[in-house]
Length: 128
Image (cartoon, rainbow, N blue to C red; front, top):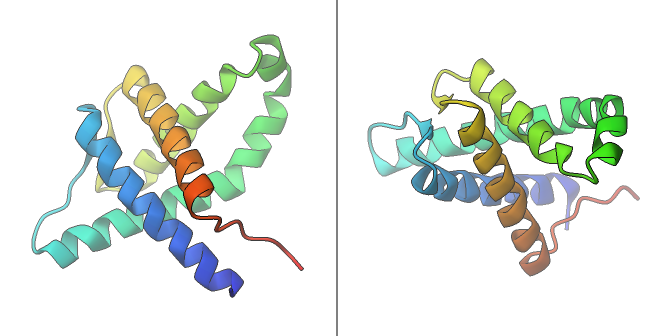
C-alpha cells in the first residue's frame, strides 16, 4: 500500500479516535457544527493537526524529556501526550482542552486506542 494512502488511513482512524475521546472526556471538545460531512471534516482536520504536531514536535519533546521519562519509568510520557494535545488545541480554533487532567486523560485514551487500532489495522508507515 502506498505511504500516502497509509498516512491518510491513519488520520481517518485518528479522527474516529478523537470523536470517541470527545464523547468520553467532558473536558475535551471539538466545535463541529453543520451537516454530518462538516462534522466529519472538522474531526479529520483536528486529527491531521494532532498527527502533524505529534510527528514534528513529539520526538523532540520526548528526547528532551528522556531523563524524566526514565526517572518515572515512562509515566512522564502521559504528560508529554497531554502537552501535545494542548499544543494541538492551542493552534486549532475548533479543538478545546479544558485543564491538565482532561489533557492527561485524553492523551492516555488516544494512545490506548491508537495502540489497539495499530494491532487491528497494521497501517505502520515504513520507509523503503
